[in-house]
Image (cartoon, rainbow, N blue to C red; front, side):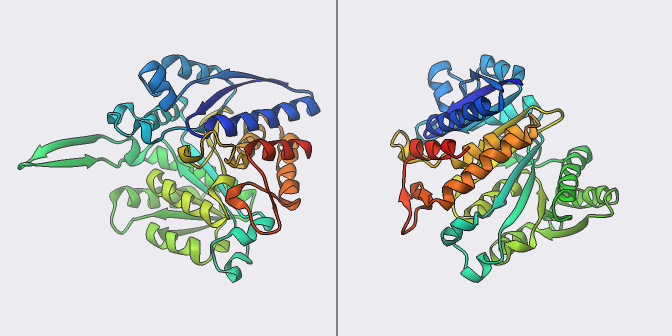
Amino acid sequence: MNKTIAIIKGDGIGPEIVTEAMAVLDTVAAKFGHTFTYQDAPMGGNAIDTFGVPLPDSSLETCMKSDSVLLGAVGGPKWDDQPADKRPERGLLKLRGAMGLYTNVRPARMFSDLSASCPLRPDIAAKGIDFVVVRELIGGVYFGEHSTAEVDGEQKATDIMAYSEHEIRRVAHVAFQMARKRRKRVTSIDKANVLDTSRLWRKTVTEVAKEYPDVELLHIYVDNAAMQIVRDPSQFDVIVTENLFGDILSDEASQITGSIGMIPSSSMGEGTRGLYEPIHGSAPDIAGQNKANPIGTILAAAMMLRYSFDMAAEADAIEAAVDATLKAGIRCGDIWQDGCTLVGCREMGAAIRSRI
């Protein structure tokens, strides 16, 4: 099988971790008889420096013509003083919108060999952490109208959160379909006691649930959800929520698994083309020092093989190699513990490749 992958290495540690993920993909291609062709698509702060915009038209065209997109990370303090429409993150929002990527899936799974890195009490961690956050990605306050104006002698800022029924319905279907393949439980997160958008969210998700009588549905408020994720994460199977809440809760969920550097994500719309990335940021403080953990990006590449290319065996091979590497006690700095072998980004990538 021949596939073209748009590569957005991005900023900070992005180039390092994406390079290791590409090397893993090349190992998979060689062993399973595939060909992966990579096309560079500059985006983020590096694109601002070179092209003056966070997402050049040429990069967007490359992504739209690809079979899928692999992203490292974008942004950093260097570009904090950019106008709002020129910040590195605006390139990512523009790309999601152009590709129609309305669903983000972030698994929160604690590898058994990393239980000592879990910040929760041992008795809580022992119950296990294995759930998925399904986040609506191109609606809500991030994509609403933003304005700042002077009112009565002071600055006043407004950000509009808006949702339509069809935006809620399509992401709810993704969550219920995923739950059917897991433990058949969906928890919908909202703030329906305060927000009109949340009341519409709850009503629409409840309607969609009628099409999945074999799946249990529970509604909880977002503040309670944040508490429950650290009190007893084992209660969750599939969480579905809107853009802002999902952004925050999925980061919380990733941290309790041991390290944010371990968690991949996929962003999908209609069709098979997706955007795959680790959920962490660009970590400019360790960029270029061979300290970054590439596992989140490598697992994102595995998700791409599974969901966009229908290569389940190949994805399994990568995930099994990651498991085997961790069981061998090989660790990057963010997940290191006594008795383990500390390695850098390149060495971790090589260790995983050797076990595929």
